[in-house]
Image 1 (cartoon, helix red, strand yellow):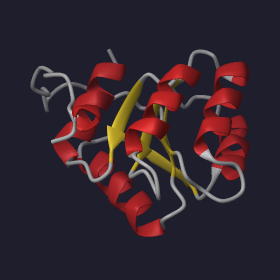
Image 2: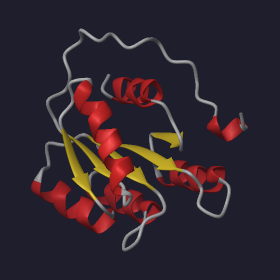
Image 3: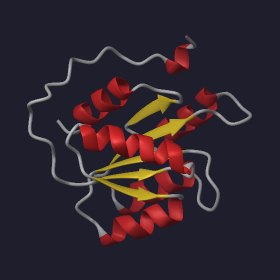
Image 4: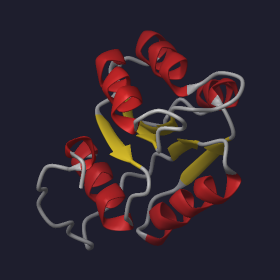
Length: 142
């Protein structure tokens, strides 16, 4: 597995712990991937909101300020993920951000490293498993 896709070892998730009631915003232009992420989160007890690009996500977030975590793809039409992260950091500095990318025509680490530099709290390389996603969300909720 490439180094940029390796994740730190995280403690196991305690499934009985109370989930934060604040919805998690998932910004992803590919509807099937967006729905899969929301399904994983909802099956684990989280509520979710969905947006197809950064502009839609930021508008939704301004209407739902109780959200505390955003999962955003990096390569999207309209407002892409790097610009979205920059705007999130400016307007919602407390927000926890998870950047996801499969890399497009480039290597995913290029985009994921830029996302980290822009202020993403965590990154995930597509494809990723439900346990990887849930471990990161649990850690960010601490």
